[in-house]
Length: 265
Image (cartoon, rainbow, N blue to C red):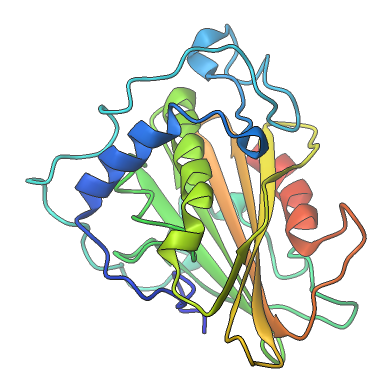
């Protein structure tokens, strides 16, 4: 169900990454959706995070030029991932460990898998292209498995500066808005974005539910996005279940966002 780099629920063929990058970045800059409130553009402040609210609430900052981030269509495609080795990751210390990754229930025991560079496939149900194609200098992915249908993965992307990371966050919010169109399932529900109060940086989460109309179980994929400085983290926590019930603020993705925040600095 979940490959090392993405959740395999898509039904559409990806278009050229550079073309999609331009379209999505342009659409993100003009949204006024109430559930997609964005944090301040760090270039508008003296400190990259000084005026961003912990929950990523909306501000009056100006929008960036959405046409400058992605590479042109003539640039070479990303190369295949390098051999697996967590010791090679320049952001190894920023990842959640198997003990820090929130479980889906009290008996979840995660086993850490591979840590490797982001590959050519988009990461997650809603993603339209890779974060390297969105302007990241590099991006690494760590996978986790547990008994049954529980799987998780985390991506850490490093950008040139805080403003570039802010642009990537707006792209991720745009993917959330378009997610129902991106996936192909008889049942597809994409919950609104929920801001997360964190001590440092910005964070938000949402839940994607996918499955067949007459199926007893569906896939529930919790998504947590954190941004701090020049780093962006995306955590996916996926399970196949009959239901998905948690107290407000205690969803696995919300717990993951709170766990990631201090690790990003």
